[in-house]
Image 1 (spheres, helix red, strand yellow):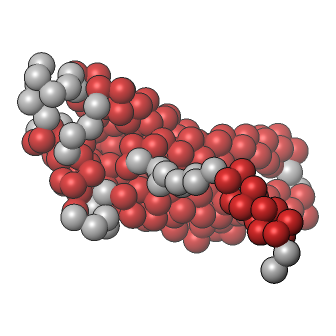
Image 2: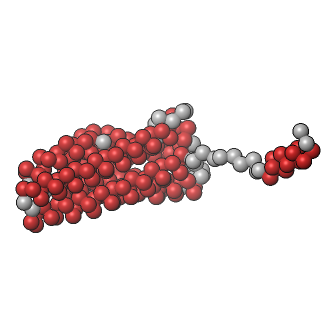
Length: 219
């Protein structure tokens, strides 16, 4: 090999920094999942609300079928967003190597604050889903029948979404010494607010699967 080639390779090697890719933290992953879910829910909720409004104001049989398809598609979009967020959150909490306690141990105050904001984002998304389901309940019976399957699927996936979040919060409460390792007052407050929202879902939708989750959030 020519000396010039050797020098070229050596120079190239020296010029490339040894970059280590850092994996997202547990909290960072939850934050991203919550933000992605909230964005998807907001977009689809607006489309559903517009379609329902058009049906109630001036729908005909043909128009109703077209608008019902729009509602159905957007309910499916929300379902997929909830499913994806659930899988992501489970992967770093209850389904993580070492279990939920491993990720909950040793969190900094900044991470606790980030998690608090993420839980608030999830709470807002769930509240918007509840409002969307309430809007669809006012559809004419024939239209409601066309979107019933998507509504049932969406209702059924809400408990799996909040369960790992509730267990992660419970693990943080177990591993955190108040006033010493971190302040979790804000996290407890938003957890209580989430529990209250879930109580509303139990009352309005009969989602009994949420009852044990509420007990975790509101000990």
